[in-house]
Length: 214
Length: 224
Image (cartoon, rainbow over all chains, first blue to last red; front, side, top):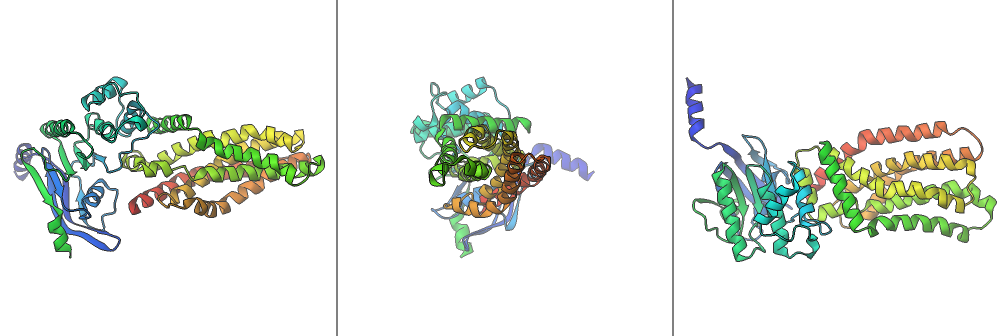
C-alpha cells in the first residue's frame, strides 16, 4: 500500500534532480559557507547570490564535482547528468565556432553539422559558424559556449555568470532559453550579479551562509 | 568511448595544424643538437660513429622532454580540462588520446628524422634499422611516462623544470636499452634482446601511465 502511495506521489511532484545536505566549503583555510541545504527539483531555477568571494563559483564547482566535498553531501537522485559552463569557457582560439561546439558536444552526445549550425543560429552566431574564435568578441565567445545548451540533453544546468559579456538582447534571449528548459522538465542553478526577470526564481543568498561560517 | 577518443585526437591534430610552432620547436632542437655536436667535438668519422647512437637518442629524449610542458597546459588554462574531466568517459581514455597526438606530432617525426641526422654522425648503415626500431618502440614509452609528469604539474606555473625532475629517472632505462640496441647492431651483435626490453617497457607504460596520469589530472583539477 505504501508503494502505491509512493508512486502516486511521484507522478504528481516533479522529480528531484539535485539534493544538497549540510554542505560546507573551505578554501585556503578560509571557511566560505557551512550548512547549505537545498533541493533542486525539475522545473526550478536557483539563483545563487552573494558578494565577491562569497563562494558562489566554489559552490557550483562542488555541485559539478570539480571541487572536493569534504563536509556534507551532494547527490543526484535521478543520476548525474549535468551541463556545467564555468567562468572559463573552454573555447579554443584556433578553432572555429562550429569546431569548438563540435568537440564540446561530443563529450556527451554526437551532433550533426546541421544541428550545430541550428544551435549557433539560435544564439545569434549565424554567419560566424566558420570564424575562428580568436576573431570573435567576448560576448560572441560566450555565445559559442551557450550554444551547448541547445545540443546537450542534460536536465541540470550549472551556469557560472552566464549573463556577463552578453548584450541586452542576449540577456533577454538567454532568459527565454531558461524558461524553455524549465518547461521541458529541466532545472538550472546559476550565479549572477544581475537580477533575473523571470518569475519563481529561487534565491540562495550566500552572504547569510558566510555570516554563519564566521 | 572510441568516438570520444577519436574526437579528442581530431581536435588536437587540428589545433597543431593551425598553430604548428609548438610542434616544430622540439624538432628543430633535435636537429640542431645533432648538427652542432660534430662542430663542438670533432668532425672525425671514427669518433662520431661511435658516439652517434648516444647523441641521437639523448637529443630525442631531450626534445621529447621539451614538448611535454604543453601536453595539458592549454587545456587547463582555457577550462577545456574541466569539461574533459566532467565528460562521462573515463579520464584514462582522455590521457591515451592526448598521448597518441603527442607521439604523432613529436615522437613520430623524431623517428622519421633519425636516419637523416644519424647519417650526419656517420652511424654505420647496419645499425640504422636498430636505431629506427628502438626509437619507434622507445618514443611512445617516453610520451606515456611524460604524460604522468605533465599531468602532475598541470596548474603549476613553472612546471617545466619539475617535469624533467619527475620524468628523467623513468627515461633513463629507455635511453640505456635504446642506445644499447644501436651499439650492439653497430658491432654486428643481435639486438632482439634490447628491443624486447624496450617493448616490455612500452607495455608496462601502456598499462600503468594512463591510469596514473588520469589520477594526477583529477587531483590537480581539485586543487585548482
